[in-house]
Structures are given as C-alpha cells and as structure tokens.
Length: 514
Image 1 (cartoon, helix red, strand yellow):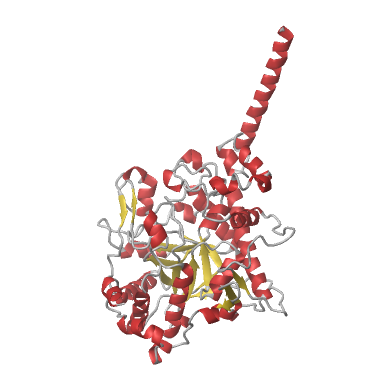
Image 2: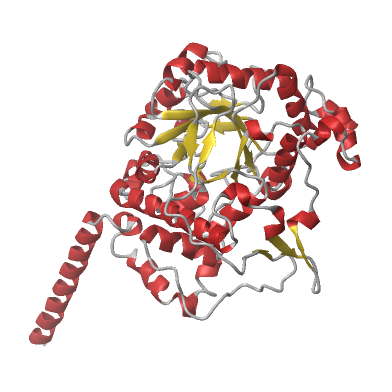
C-alpha cells in the first residue's frame, strides 16, 4: 500500500513539474499570444484548431473565433500572416450558383504579374508633397481602443512593408512613432491631439505635429461606417494619464467626441477647412473620410470643390459594414450606406463633376482578401484600407470582447498584463506578411484578368449572379457617368439630386428636398 502511494505521489510530482515547465515555456515564448496570456489551458484552442475539420460545426462556428468574418476568410488571414502556403486540395467551398455571388472575369490570355506591386500617387494639383500609397493599408484605429503593443505591431509592420498606418481619431501617440512607419494622421470631431481646452481646433498644435516627417497625409473624419452620425464617449475611468496626454484632454474626466464638427457647417466650409489642413501640414496631402448618407450631400461637396477652386487630395469611403470596438446596435445595423454603393456614388459624383482626376479614393469596410481589394478597385477605389484583418494579423481572435477591456489576445485592451501577451516583434512580422501576400495576390488576380495597372480595370470585369439563369456585369448593373457629364447635361437619374445640391448646406434641408 505504501509503495502504491509512493508511486502515485511520484506520478503526481512528475505531472506537476511537467505542467509547471509547460507554463513557464508558454509565458516565455513569443509566437502565440493566447499561450502568453493563458499558459497551459491555451493549448486547448490549438488542439481544437488541429481537429477543426471534424469539430468546426460545433465549436468554430459557435463564436469560438467570433462571427464577423466567415471561417474561410479567418483562415485566409491567419495563414497569410503566418506565412503558410494557401494552396489546398479539391476546390471551392462556395456555392457559385447562389444568387448574389460575384466573380472576377479572367482572360484567355493572362499576363505575368509585375515584379513590384502597383502604388497610387496621392496628391492633387494643390499638394506640394504627394505621397505614394500602397494598395492595402492599415485603416483607422485609435490608441485607447487598441493597446500600445497593438499600435506598435501595426506600425512596425507598416514600416517593414512600406504601407500606411492610419492613427484613427484618438490622437498621435508615441507608439505610432516608435518604429517609423508611415502615418495617416486622422482628426475627428474631438480634434484629439490638436485641440484647445474648450474642444475647438488648435491650428498651432496641428501645424507642429503635422510637420513630423513620419506623418505623410492628414485626414479629417466626418463619419465612420460602424456608427455614422454618432460621436463617441470614453468613460472617465478609462481616461488614463497616457491617453489624456495623447488626446489633449483632462485625465479622469469623460472624453466626448461630438456628432459633428465645430469648425465648419457647410460643404464649402468643409472644403476650405481641408485646404487649410493641407497648408498647415506644409503641403502634405489632405482629405476626409465619410460613410455616405444622402447622395445630395456628396454632390453638394462636389459643387463646393468647384466653387472654392480646390479639392481634397483624397476621400476615404467607409462602408456601413465596417466594424468598431463598441457601437450602438441599431446604428451599426441600420444606418449608413454599404461600401459598394457608397464607393460608386462618390466615384461617379467626382467623375460627373469633372473632379475625379484630382481626387484619389480609398475604400474601407471588411477588406480582407485580394479579391476584396480588386473588387473595390473595379468599383471605383484607387486603394484600400483594412482594420479588422490587420487586427487579426496582429493576433486578434475575434473574441468580441473589445468593449470590456478583457481582450484575450492583448489587442484591444489597456490592461498591461493582457497587453503583454502581444509580442510586437512576432506580430509585426505577421502584419507585414499578411499585407504583402494579399497585395501580391491582388496583382496576380489582375494579371489573370489581363491588366497590370489597377487603372486599367473596368466594371465589365466584375460580374454578379442575378438569378438562376442570369449573370450580369457591373457595367450593366449600374450607371457610370462620363467625365463632366453633370456639368454638361445631367442624366435623368441624377438631375434632380444635382439641382438640389448646394455648396451652402448639408443634411436635413437637402435630405428633405430629396
């Protein structure tokens, strides 16, 4: 009996030592964020990944990894970030005969993809310092929403890959500057980082900050797809000393982003303010981001460009399918225009007003794969931005706990112990690999379609299944204006909106007339 107890105790000691050793290894290794945060038990997640083909219906598709992206998209992002070979046996798992399915049109005479991916020059005739923008960049995500380590990883990845990193409206933090990646500095309605004590725009502070060489463009946020028409509130308890310094607000006090801007109230005022931002930034490209609402407002902005005699260097169109760490549910689901419709509205409005050659268009809203990128280029974009996929490349597992400060992967938390799990060196490599593989694949897709330059893409090269017996191209499905058409002879489908649109007003007045 004593021998049996001794034998059992020996096994228990050995098991305990093994578990302790595994826990120590998990805490010290840098590759897996989940294991750094949840030593030992985190291995259960990777076990489930190994047996996913058998268990995916029970576990994976029941919010183990969250639901915003489908399973294949999640796998694609993770594999590209890890540098895993994406090729697989058999074939598509999509129902290509499903109504609504879209596909790109390849050519019988495909080309070789170019050695270097295409880039886009952002900067119109009034811009003194144009910027060469990558086809895929990090979309707007603020420090405060993201952890310091997540910001570091994204920016370091951007530097490694030569693409841009948008700060979001939460201000320019030291972590955005630490690794030298190119920055798009975004200002929202709170003017964080260039703000007076009463919440107005501080031109002197803006000028000093925008002079930093790392800042390549400056962007004004009008609205975002996840919650258009709504500002934000950061509770007083979350306004730490660090966040207060970054945003230029008092520590420990509620931080509010109002719904609209103080510094302008008309389309003309918007265009004049963007031009002022460009001047204050020393001639760097300046533009704005919006989720499209009324088409009349978009046309009013075009009329303001014509009246003022200048234009933004870029417009970022954010689709209503875009995400955020926390948004009012009904705004998230029922307000705002989808990226497809919003993008084509802005593109056609600029073309019809004779302004398209002066303004570059960025597209943001669930851009994850190379096919998403190419589709947005077909629909009128010059380049794309991604938030969710970039977060996933940096370690996000879509646990959908962003608003709780209990993010298990250290991406969307200000808790130092949780943020520690995200290793900047490893995750920046993953961000770099994901972006590079996606853009390279986009260039390969375009070559298969017979083009080397995104500017050669046409609406006829994207087709949608409309019924069981009919497939139509975007050239057939949608109306595409010709350059200057709104100025010369507006088509009947645009004439009423063009007549109503005024450079002197936004919003309810125009919308009511519409």
